Image (tube, rainbow, N blue to C red; front, side):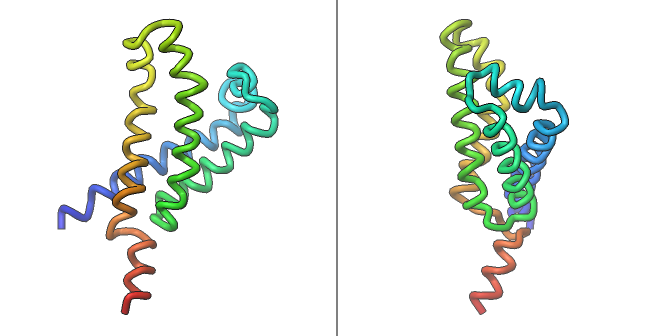
Length: 137
């Protein structure tokens, strides 16, 4: 059924983006990891950047396969809230709404997709569905 694919596409989008971002924090620590956290005033950056990266990688993978999806979405929503508070809110104050809206479009899309997964779950093509269907029998 075509109604079974939206959650899968949303999971792949969200999961792959968070997986990629988590890996990049390790690959490029000066610009995307601890160096960026330091610049944003998140201290101790040497702790929070790897900690956040690990959550992005782990939760991204869980979302991709659709396992413990609603639980995995919660830390990712926290990541998005912190990203808004530390990057988009100051930009809104300093440069105005439209600059912030342009720069925050991906953050907004990711947050709304995470909320979708939190409300509706992983969908039929997921480990959550497979395991739940087996328990239900």
